[in-house]
Amino acid sequence: MEKAITRFAPSPTGYIHIGNVRSAIYPYLVARQTNGKIILRIEDTDRERYVEGATELIEDTLKWLGLDWDEGPLVGGPNEPYFQTERLSIYMEWVQKLLDSGRAYADPTPPEKIDEYRKECNEKKVPFLYRNFRPENTPTWEPGIPIRFKAEPKEYSWHDEVMGDMHTGPEVLDDIILIKRDGYPTYNFAHIVDDAEMGVTHVMRGVEYLSSTPNYLALYEAFGLERPKLVSLPHILAPIGNKKLGKRDGAKSVTEYRDDGILPEAILNYLASLGWNDGTEQEIYTKEELIEKFSIDRIQNSGARYDENKLFWMNGQWIRRIFNEQGARALYDRTINFWPESASNYPEEYRIKVLSIIYDRLKTLSDLKDMTNYFFEDPKIDTDIIKNNKFLKKMSEAEVEELLKKSIDALAGLKEWDAEYLQETLNGLLAESGKKPAELFSLIRIALSFAPFSPALNLTLEVLGRETSLARLNAVARSI
Image (cartoon, rainbow, N blue to C red; front, side, top):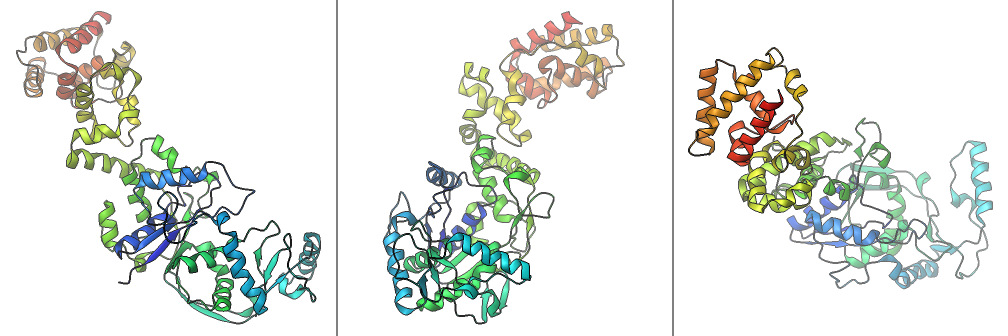
């Protein structure tokens, strides 16, 4: 396969929406798979929507996801600068070619007049095309006057790598604005120039740009440029499935997911798989596997519904994978900011032990706070939890107290406090007491944690240790 040059060209208008990240992932995979390169370009010409610090947030997000770039901010490259606001002289050179060839013109028409034209078309119930109102005598361009492309209406046919063969008639071509009144280029013009200057071979972007493609083709033609491969990426849909995912649908930024304890591997894996598959039943992919297996022809041409629960499930799978393949320490290093505050009073070795018996129940790293509190501080005793437990509510207080004391006596007599001996002792208690596992084990578990969940009882006892375990059991027995 030819080496592909792709680009991710976000606008610094705020955080990177989770639904937009796929527009960075797919170009990255194509570039890496073909030993090509990916360019990061910041399209910052919309100054009204520009947000200070947004570029740094974009860079930080991409680096956290492991999506490095070959050219662009921070790394430089042969096509500097990579901020569109620093490329204004380049755009003027290109637009001058169109002015000189008669394919562009300065348009002094005031916005109010254009609104009148639009209203007139609406009243006549005909499409508004500015080329039908093109001024006859256009002035020499001066700063402050918009520059428009002079369309030559014709049919266009092209191949979209996802949508297939496309065709449109002359009715969709119009005199689009190239340079705005403020002197900045429009997206419709600037991206054509930038892609040409930077040698981009694959233009991968959202399907919403498909309707504008004929105007882009007209610009390629006017400049005598070879068309790049056009790859329209279908929308990521809101959970209800009938519209594009947006902030109003609860879609969060990548930063929010990171703060919630979602791993970068999970986000990369989930978003790459959202609207693409390799034809197998595989669901968990490393970045290296995605690079190897990804192909444009396997991108589906319809929208894919966003399912946050699937992302959480996949994150749990990645938590377990990291633990099993890289070890407890590797996973622990990811959890530093997610422990309950009281955990700071305990050494790392102890926290790693806790993680080692709890990790397989985590969906996000932030679950650690609620799931591990009782390992670091004595829980508040609430005997109502025992009384209302579905396995224990039929037992009298005297029976509960007696069963606790038998458990304390059996556990206190252990010479070695490890998981194997603890399990043997618990099994012996079952036989001696005649209770069901759900009854005996639920009682001990609640007395130790007063939490809705705890790991295997013998492992919980082992990590808590003899002194803490017996002290908690005795405290509960006295409270019955």
